Every structure is written in C-alpha cells, then in structure tokens.
Length: 423
Ligand code: ASP
Ligand code: MG
Image (cartoon, rainbow, N blue to C red; front, side, top):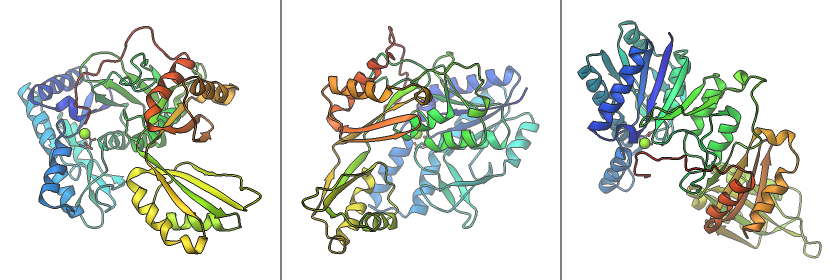
C-alpha cells in the first residue's frame, strides 16, 4: 500500500493526552499497512503565546528571529509525537521543515515553498520508520535561514509534502468532522459535506472558510492531490476534497456547496473622483505600489451634473492603514474630495459549481438577504461564486438566511466541535 500523509492541527496535539491519542491513531494507520508521514502543528495556542512573548520583549521583533522563535512550537510537537509512537513500540523519527527538505524563498513570516527535497523522509520510510515533520516552516534557499510559511500553513506543508512523496492521500485532522455548508458556530444546522471539488473548496477558503489554508487547496489543485478533512477525535469519515481531474462524470453535483463569510476586510471609498481617463489607473497604481491585496472594486456611474464618481474597494483590514496613506498622498494629483474608511463590514459568499448551469441563483440569494432585512453594499461574482458586502453586525443573519433559502439546513445538529479554544 502507498504513502498516507496525515496532518494534525494544534487542538489535536494540545496536551500529553492528545499527543498519545494521535500517536495511537498514527500507529493504527501503520498497522493497516500504510507508510505514514505525519505533519504536526504547534500544541494548542503555542504559536500565539510565542508571539505574545516576543511582543512583551519588543514591539517590533526582527522577522528572522520571530521565525526562529515560532518554529520552536512545531518542534515541540514533532518530538513529543515521535516519543509517544516509540512508547507504543513503533519506530518514529522527527524532522524540522529544513531537515525534511522544505525549501522556501526568504520572505520571513510568509515564505513560499519553492521546492521539496524529501530525501531524509524517504530514507526514514525505507527504514520502516514513521516520519514526523514540523509543519509551517522551511529553510530559505538563499540565506539558509529558517522561515515560516504564514499562519495556519501546516496544512500547506502537508499537501506539498504529500505531492512531493506522491502519496495516495493527504489527511488533514482537526477538531471538527469535516467541511460544513457554513460555519457551525453561526449555523447550528450546517451539514457536513461528504465531498467537494477543489475549485469549490478554493472559493470557500478564499472567502473566509477557515477549515483549510487557501494555499494548501491551491497546491492540492495543482498536483491533483486528494485531501480528506476529518476529526482526530472521532472515527467518522470526513469530507473528501476531490481534484477536478478526478471528478467522475457520474458524480452528481449539488448546486450549492456552501455559504462562507469573512470579517477580516474593510471598505475604502474614494469620494468625488473626476470622471476622466486615467484616474482609476492612478488610484490603483498607488495602491499596487504598497502591495495591498484588493478584493472587490466598484465604480459608480458618475452624476452627469458634477462629472464626479465614487470608487469603492475592499481589502484586508490589516492593509487599511497603508492603503489610506497611499491614497492621501495622491489627493492633489487626482483631485478627489475625500476618503471614507469603514471596517464594520463583512463579506458573505454563496459558492457552488452548479451555479454555472442553474439560472436564478442570484435572485434567490438577494431575496433571502432582503427578507432578512440585510442591505447589500457591494457585489462581486465569479463563475461559481456570488459575494456581497454587508454591515458587519448583520453577517450572521445573512449567512443563516442564505443557508435556509438554499435548503442547506440539516434536520439534526451534525456539527460537533471537539476541542480547541477557537483562538
Ligand atoms: N502553528 C501555526 C499557526 O498556528 C501553523 C498551523 O497551525 O498550521 O499558525
Ligand atoms: Mg495553529
């Protein structure tokens, strides 16, 4: 039988009991005849605690040193899991990201994987050992310094490693039973999906679903790696994320996969922009230079009497300050009236590949929002997604109303959150 890569999140290895439970599960997979490679996250909230600690020492930790500190979290879990497996009488060896051959660029805190050379992992497997790899970290090709891949990126380590090792499947274990049609904390009647396509999962992750790291889904799509998202606290089948290439024609596609939401964005409006050729380019060039990631962009029809228009866009709240300063600097040049900043907004997205062939989805979505009394501030769409910006305080209602309107509600409560502090 082939290689299985299993990734265990922080809540699954939060304490000694959790580590022993996970070790037993890994050993069971090994006994079933698979070669097993495991990727672990830091225990519980360790990464946040290490960050807090750094901030107590200095408000601006040097990025190289911060990465050095944060990667220690995953090192703790990998060694403890290896010890727990040894205690069960099986061979295990732990490896840092660098030892596992995770080669990255040198952007500390958000490094990108550029290559994986898993020679030592392959040797460990040949020796009959279970390899335990620290997630979320690598080593820079240029500087040889230790890097981190961004918050939540152990998922990405797991899928990238699975692809490099040509594993049969990448299993991602967390504290919920799989991918749900909406966040169960907001919609208790959310349903677990048995399967979802990678293109739908990409949209869900990009629109705020936190169950999987966006980059890990991109990897899975690029390398056709099936992912099985499941709970480490139960034996239930989770959700299979099926690469588009392996999507059988016989597979019946639900129209809607789910409703995602995101409270991490802000909206900026540039008011009174002269409606002339080149003004939008000037505004977005200034924003581009600050490397701000824009999401939705809307330009209103200009009022004939004034020849002025408003341009609104959304962006991550964390980029809000940088974007406002960049725009303030070009006020005279562009000649706009004023800037408005609003971070009391949320994005609600309806996702489903079946939208392509079913008319009327937009009308049903907007009708659901209207009957819940939720006002739509901005709209954007892709082939398989419709997103709206609404007032932040109305996000929960909007998600629930949409979930109900598309008959996604389950009769029973399916979602159990087994662990974690939700931090
Ligand atoms: N420990 C890291 C974090 O909390 C990576 C991960 O959990 O995937 O962001
Ligand atoms: Mg974590």
